Image: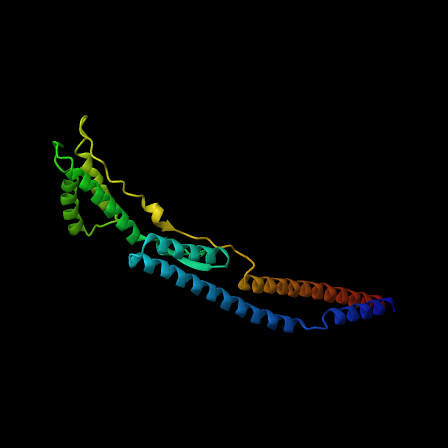
Length: 242
């Protein structure tokens, strides 16, 4: 009798806990996963749009302030949204959270060319240099090699050619020529990271999905142990009768 009462209590307890069916929770969970994927895709597309605007401004030779404003907009959006991205790195796909690297190649080229032009102008006024205009000599050599090899800024081979050519003409003790201050390429490389989770629309739905998934898992664990307990009581009562 005692075993039957315990089984009855367990069954009533299961009926209360599982009044709302687990399969209904599973369907809601599947729908939420679809919503999560849709929201994450929307955030990724917005990030791509903002990144394309930065690169378009760079290529269109907009002023530095306009490019900086678009970079700030991209950075702020990336830092306040979950940007799930897949990066192709040397033929291997890598999952990241953020924009991935982007290069302002045209802005760098404009700055480097401006610095070289300024250095050449300074060299033109250094008429007493026994080596002549060393920047023009370097340009003649490297431009010819660049056309032949397909080099141009910011190709490291082109820059190395310039450095090698200029090194052939050591500075005199009495004559100084102002050098070209070519900026490092890293100053024009950006890679904005996004949080793995944050309080945005997609983040809230992901949190709800996670909580519901945990509830479903806990319900399944409870169901398993309750069924195990009922099975044990059934087995015990049969053994007692025998």
